Length: 115
Image (cartoon, rainbow, N blue to C red; front, side, top):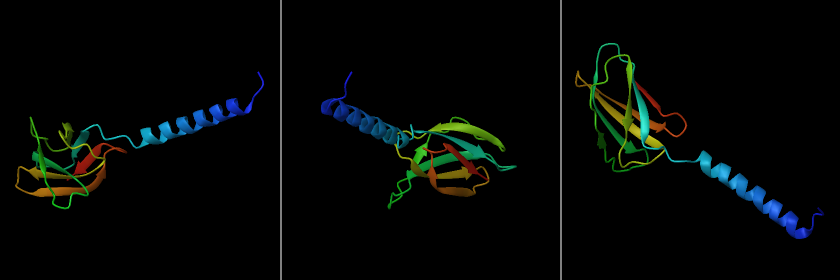
């Protein structure tokens, strides 16, 4: 089959569309899920909040915690309405201490470690 100008244009357009699809998939949304790792040796996590990192007014959204996250364990969470890659995560331990993880990119690694 001889390649004429239209065939070459179609091949070129196909390559551009395929490349664009690859870029779009690499910037996919977080899927609203992350794994929280409690690296604390003695305190359990009682409450978890999330907020988009660029949220200037910091509207924290309480994430439902169906069970405490015991020391040195992990738990999976669903963020609900927030669909962002860069988030801040705030946790409260049973000691009353809070910890903040800022600018967590859960699209690259949906794992948040707190201690």
